Image 1 (cartoon, rainbow, N blue to C red):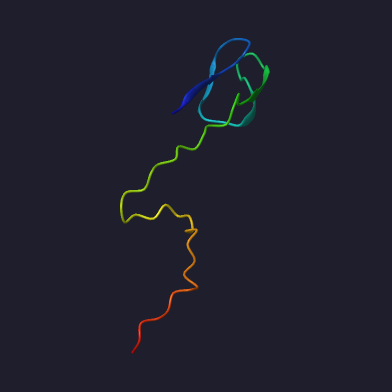
Image 2 (image 1 turned 90 degrees about the vertical axis):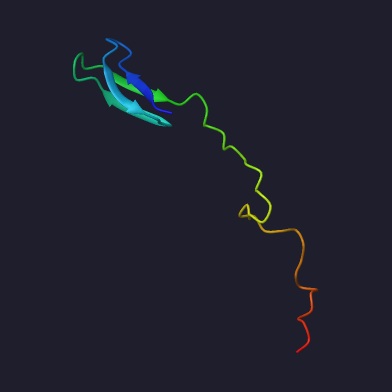
Length: 70
């Protein structure tokens, strides 16, 4: 999701994208624009499909498992 980043004084489009903090000078009117994200985007958690790992370690210990004989 990209957002237009515009000058707060003259409304000229300065950039397009996402930011956490940004300071940018408008080439038209010379205003220094200091921008800060209102909130960080939340990470969407997806339920893994059967047989697919979600990258986390299991709570189950394999330490008690015995190797098969032979």
